[in-house]
Structures are given as structure tokens and as C-alpha cells.
Image 1 (cartoon, rainbow, N blue to C red):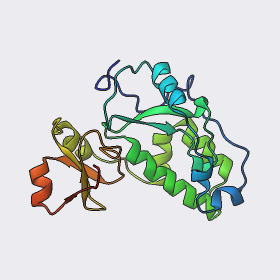
Image 2 (image 1 turned 180 degrees about the horizontal axis):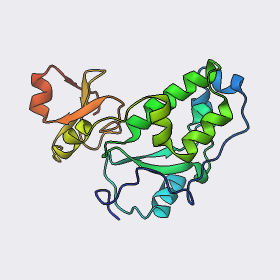
Image 3 (image 1 turned 90 degrees about the vertical axis):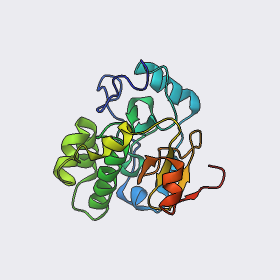
Image 4 (image 1 turned 120 degrees about the horizontal axis):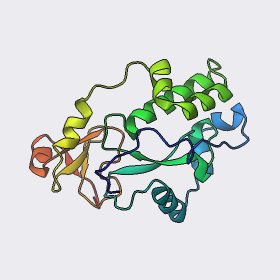
Amino acid sequence: MQAQDQRPIRPDPKLTPGATFDVTLQDISSPGYSKTVRAVTIATRREVFREYGITNTGPGDYEIDHLIPLSLGGSNSIKNLWPESYRTVLNAHVKDRLEDRLHALVVHGKVDLKTAQREIAEDWIAAYRKYVGPLPAAAPIQSIQAHRGNDVWVNTHSGKYFKAGSQWYGKTKSGEYMSESEAISKGYRAAKGG
């Protein structure tokens, strides 16, 4: 399967049922907690792509995502990892909004940690509707469909743009593809090394 073929919007529950660390509310409330436990090797990432039958990916096609995010006690087990597309409307950036919202709700005692873990693992799209609101319209896909191989990725938050091959190409939470000349004319700057 190539990256432009069937991109899983939802993880396969047989391959990715979700898995958690034994954590407390205090653990996940600690600033920087996710960074301290993130540990997914390149070999594991490759295995996830193999399990899902994805043999050819390009920069910005997918992220290997934690179904139950680290911020909610999700583990680095392959049972909690799946290739989440950046090139569909319901993409990794959309799920990130849900993860942030659930984390805030759990930390502030509005949603039980186990409930948040269960709901995001069972159906992250239904959880998005419940905790965030209506799903995004098809607008984000338009910029992806217009993406040409020589486009740059503009991080609309930082004001910097990245060229294909950069580790941040297509991967920042807020951004869009456009020609380099368009990015420059709109006042965006080339990122160092990108």
C-alpha cells in the first residue's frame, strides 16, 4: 500500500486496541510528563507501518501516533501505535485537539482518566464529537489536494516555512502547503535548516 492509498482514519482495533502505563493523575499532570516517557524506536515505527501494510510513505504523510496519548497515560507499546494520516480531513492535527481537550478535562477533574482512555481508544472520532464539538469541514483537505511536490509547508503559528525533506515538513499543528514564492510574498521566513 502506498501513502496515497487507503489511509487509516481509525486504527484497526485488532492491531491497535490501545495500551496504557500504570499512571496516576499526578503523573500526567506533571509538566513535561509525556517527554519523559516517549520512547518509540525506529524499528517499532517500521513494524507499525508493516502491520498496516503501508510500504511507501513520504515526508508529512503520517505520524506514528499513540491511540491513547502519552498525556493520558498511553504507553509506547505497539498495541497503542498506529499510522495516523496528515493527508485526510480527520488527521493527526484534529486528533491532537481532542488529546489536548481530554487532558485538560482529566487534570481539572471533569472527566475520569479511565473514561478518557477508554473513549479515545474505542472511537476517537466519537470522542472528538463529544468533547470538542463538530468535526472539521473538508476545508483542510483542499490545501492538501493542492499540494504539489515543490511546495513548502508553512507553520502559520511561527511564521516559518519548511521544504520537503525537513523533519517539520507537513508536521506542525497549524500550517498549510503553498509555493515558496507565495510563502515569501505573505511574509513567511525560511526556517533554519528547513
